[in-house]
Length: 479
Image (cartoon, rainbow, N blue to C red; front, side):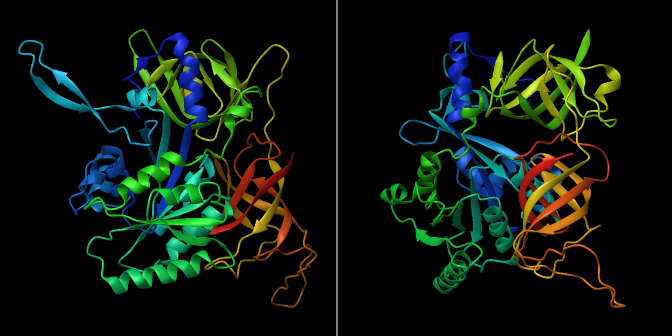
């Protein structure tokens, strides 16, 4: 993220700008097995240039050298695409003229600030890792990304793998509608395509997914599935080399209705999720920039806020010095905006900032927020490939994801809700006290963080894993 390049919008346009990025901004996760072509597809959609068949399109969006060399994404990255009123992608270029000769000097692609300002609606594609060793990063991206939809990419030349199935189950567990994209259809043998579609249909119609496959063949088909994505799973065959199906995919992305109504949370108290931290030094002083998501309320330049919790469980009072949205300077950010805040923090506190913190409202009438060491959640233990033997009982240790928070926690108590009481016996035959939860069970589970307290509230979605996703639910009580 480049926080140095920015432009400003007029005060009269700022409200419309921030509202657009809240109300007309859809976030789409791009998931699927490694080598399915996720980064290549994003690079092609964003640049408007076809791939050379060797992954050249992905080079422009990858963040690290080892990703470019290996062709495998290992981190989470977001890429903005703008659409006009006719659902056409805005991939135009600025023309830079030579001031002396008056001739075209060179072309420059529009940056995110220009896209956000000029587009009618926006789509952010979140590139997530496909390799099994990076599954924890993918789960964190799904949990914290405020995802509206998921594009599941499947290599048409090979049947869906176990990681494809796991990614599908992950999206379904988080109640995210899925859209299947069959990639690399250029040169795909007919029998391979048939086998891939047959296995894909079996996965979608399974008892876990329960979706009806629907292949989109023309633009008019998009209107059929727009309001039925909880039941129907669209399938679009595409090729980033020949361009087949890309226009259809653009039309589908541009027409997706926004699921998360953050604009309805603007009048609530401020809740800003800190996802990343940057330190900017300059002559005469410096600033600490936190990047994150405004989950509720609004935040303005000059406002005093709480930030925390720190290692000791306390919150610090800080001043918001400036705000940037999509490299554009604004005075106020509202719920639904992905935002950079420059905070006036002391030198000692800067190094203590971490991802997973919150920025919360501060005024003379409110006391500092109180973080929690333990919490209770109503959980469903997931079924799926490789997890059906999982047993959840007291003292079970796991990695917990609560929105942008991820921390190791232990289970203090399990109370089954579905009436199926299970007991677990030691090898010597001695029965354990308490309930035992297995795949398919619903249970009230009490967790305790192992490292430090976190800010939580009832209603937050929580998931836990130990290699694979084990359970998902909602926090009912904090303590």
